[in-house]
Every structure is written in C-alpha cells, then in structure tokens.
Amino acid sequence: MSKSSGKSDSNSRSINPDNFNDLLDALPDLNYIISSDGLIINGNRKGLTILGIDEYSLGNKYFKEFLPDSIHVQFQENLNQALITNERSNFETNLIQNGGKLLDVELFISQLTTNNDNHAPVCLIVARDISAKKKQELDLLRFTNLAHFTVNPIEITDPFGHIIYVNPAFEKASGYSKEELIGKNPNIFSSHKHPKSFWQKMWQTISSGKVWVGEVENLKRNNEPFYTQILVSPIVNPDGDLVGYFGIHRDISEKKYLEQQLIHAQKMESIGMLAAGLAHEVGNPLASISSLVQIIQRTSEDEFTQDKLELIKSQVTRISRIIRDLVDFSRKSTYELQLTEVNKNIRDAVEIVKVGKKAKDIQVKLDLTDKLPPLSLVPDQIEQVFINLLLNAVDAIQGKFFADGQQKQISVSSYMTEDNIVITINDNGKGIKQDDLTKIFEPFFTTKKVGEGTGLGLWVSYGIIKSFRGEIRVKSTENVGTTFTVHLPVQ
Image (cartoon, rainbow, N blue to C red; front, side, top):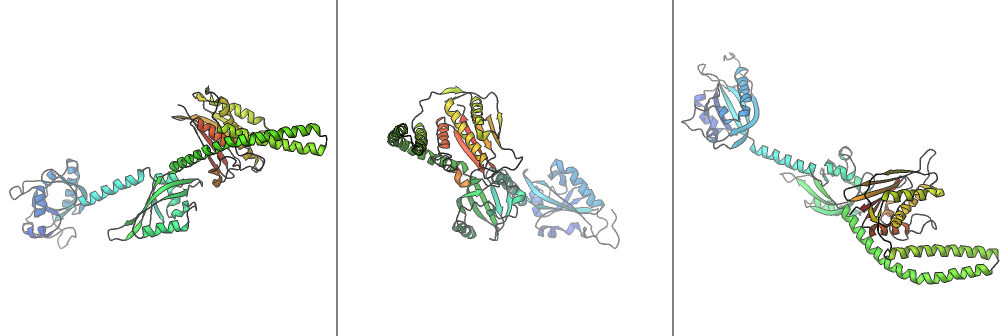
C-alpha cells in the first residue's frame, strides 16, 4: 500500500516495529502488532502471556485463532478497512485466553505506518479488558429486571423527593401511570391519616443515611385506601454523596382486612351474647306494654287517645322487630342446609324488591352466569341477604339527585371463580363516606335518616354470609355508587 507523500495521518504512526517492544510493554492494555494477513508478529508481555504465546510460537499464530468463530468475518472486514482506507475501528468481542477461558475485550484496530518503505503494512491491535464493565452491566441488567418485574411496588426518587422511577407493580397498586408519577412528590398518595411528626421522623432517619421501615396508609388514584409496609433506603454513590432514595412496598391490605375481620368477629360474638340477654330482659316488659295498649284501645273511644295509642303500638312493633333480629342473629340457625340455586334466589329477591314503590323507576340489570353449581345454603337466609342489599341500593339511589335523563340503575351479576361463586350488587346511588365503610356492618349503624332503618340489615346479612363460610365486602365512592360483593365457597 502506498503512503501519501508529505502528509501525516492521525490514525497512523511512523514507527519501526522491530524496536517497539519497550513502548508496547509500557502500555496498560493488551497490545499486538499483526501483519496484513493477521499473523501476530509482536506484542507486549501482558498481551502475549494472556494468549499463551512465547518466543518460540511468536510469528506462527494468527490473531483470529484467539477470537470466537462467529467474529472472524467481522474481524477480517475491520482489518481490511484499516489496511485499505487507513481508518480506525473498534468493536466488542471475547478473547480466548490460554486455557480456553474467555475474556471480554474491546478491540481497537488501526494501521501502523513504518519509517521503512521496505516493511509491509502492519496493524496495531489494542485489546482493552472490559470484563469489569461487562460484569457491572450484567449486574445492572439483573437488578433492573428484578426491580421492574417484582410483584412488590418500587419507587425511586431524587435527593429532593421527586419520583424518577416506578415499576409496573407500583402503577398497578396505585392506579397511576408512570407518566403521571414521574417528577411528582410521593405525597400525591397521602391519605392525610398520618401526623406530620410521622413523616418528619422518616425524613430524619433517611437523611442521616439510615434505612426507615414503617406501615403507611395511602390512597389510590380512585381514592381507595391501600396499606403497605414500606422500606425507604438512601442511595449513595461511591464518593458517599446522596443521589436519591429507594422505596419498596409490601402490600398489607389483605392483612389489614383480616385484622378488621377478626376484630369485627370478636365484636359480633360479644354483641351476640349481649343480644340474647337483652332480648329476654326487654322482650317480656315489651309484651306487657303491647297488651296494655291493646286493652286501652278497646276501652277508650277518644280519638286523640286512639291516635297516640296507635303511635305507641307502631313503636312497640318496631322495637319488637329489632329484638327479633337480635335474637335471630345471636342464636344458632335451626334451618336445615339445602342444595340451593343461587341464581334463583337472586331473581326471586329482585322480583320482591321491584314490587316496592321506591323501585318502580329503577332499572335492574341482571348478568347471571348459567350453570352455577348448587350450594349448601339456607335458601330463605341467603334470599334475605340479597333483599337487604337490594333495598339498601334502592334507598341509596332515592337519596341522590339525578338530572333529567340520567338513569337510576342497579346491576346484579353472578360468576364463578376457582373456589367461589361471586355475586355483585352495584348501584349508582349516593355512595358511602370512606370513614363510614369500616363501620357499615356494625349493629345499629346506619347512614339513613332516623326512623328509616334500624342498622341491623347489613349486620344480620354479614352474620348469615359468615355462617356459610363466605365473605361480604363493600366498595363505595360518594356520589358515584356502591358495590357489595358476596363470595360463597363452592366446597
């Protein structure tokens, strides 16, 4: 190959390859001088030793012998490019060391221009060890995949607390998309249930370089609460500078729900015992009052007196109904279990509720899955549950203002999961306040006006479903609607 007279090329070096050993040995990388056909004609000690080339084998080994077969074509193309166009090239590959072990390297190939025209053109190959870099990249890839695909929600913030990364599990748990969260402060999820001192203690802990662990109640995008145990750790670079914070959450919503269920069950047991005694102590005097009222009604013809006695009689009847509900709840059922078609009970309950005046302008949609397996239930009791839930839905709709043309609607569905038949009753009524949701199944608690409900319907329904080893849950948003979900185990 002819040289350009009077011009120097930044990619070439004027050098005598025969006197190049000292310079090559002074360089930190693996260095080789190869001929135009790829024969290794020189190299530094480090480079030759790692390939197992000694003074006897030098000049008998071709460089591509130490490269994987898959890279031979690319190597020859880059070598030709250096010899013909005098252009420098580089690429990553593996170098086969003495003993067969592979070394990750980045190869730089460039032509060496000698100071003797009698010398054939040669090339310098610099092999830079990038095994540490590759290991870091592999570690980063592993940790990136671990963070991205773990089921635990993960968030990373900058030193000022702005979110710079969330994984898909965090998006799913919070209801927010990644685009909505990047750049935001985590207080976007705040339920405002924790005092300022709670968060101040957390910031004091992580700002001092320590790990903080705590249980937090946050709000999803739809304002539903979600409970997590969160670990927040500072992220520090090799120089010891704080560059951000790493937070990993563990969903404990189910744990919280089970704790609430346990507390509720203990409360139900206590109230049940109280109800049995109360019914006995109050029932007898109430029966006496009712008898006296009837006697006075028969002996008095005064219209005012009759009106007041009728009022007393209606209130006695109301108290008697409450006591009867208490007794029904507190004592074990004497009904026999029967194989029951749940869909039939749902349809019967809907027909009963639709007869009422309040439900006449409400559209009830049924979406019932056919061929559900029959369950061992007490038909009358499960039907009572559906009627209670439907009546509550009707009252919720009647308590909300609907614009002209806006449909009042109750949707009832049934479907099968792996272990349960699930029934949902959804309405687009006035909804329930979040603070009231935790008390909705407690006795005598009601969101209705005084005199419109005893607060025992859901309590009794809860007891019935639990007696069948099922579950009943509620979700609600104010002015949007409420959904009750009943799970009845197949086995």
